[in-house]
Length: 119
Image 1 (cartoon, helix red, strand yellow):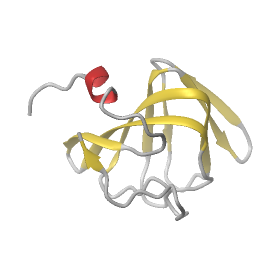
Image 2 (tube, helix red, strand yellow):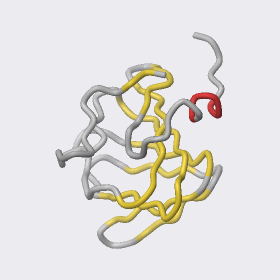
Image 3 (cartoon, helix red, strand yellow):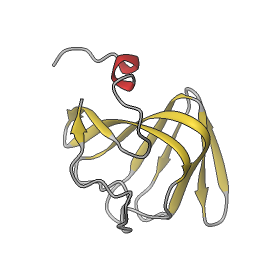
Image 4 (cartoon, one colour):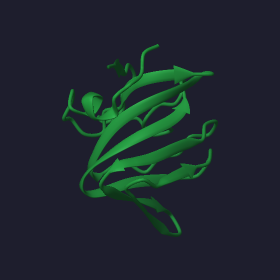
């Protein structure tokens, strides 16, 4: 695999809440996604997720607290923990998660993405 330029990949899409696969390793997907607004409350019973902020900031809401994640910071949401990402303005995120991870976890709605694009 060739090197990946994150900014070039981010320039290829503008939609929000639609992760794109940019790499794979050891059963994990490396994904890029743009957030804006509120996502759906959900959890992943069998998968941890890592959210790395490339540009901007967002809040990860949990039922008992809220954590702000800024540019060049990351947050790991452990399996089984209910959460909801919220971004007041557009934020660009890199995700590391098992290839089996469904973006909306245990909640299926219009934001659920079953087949992700590879860019």
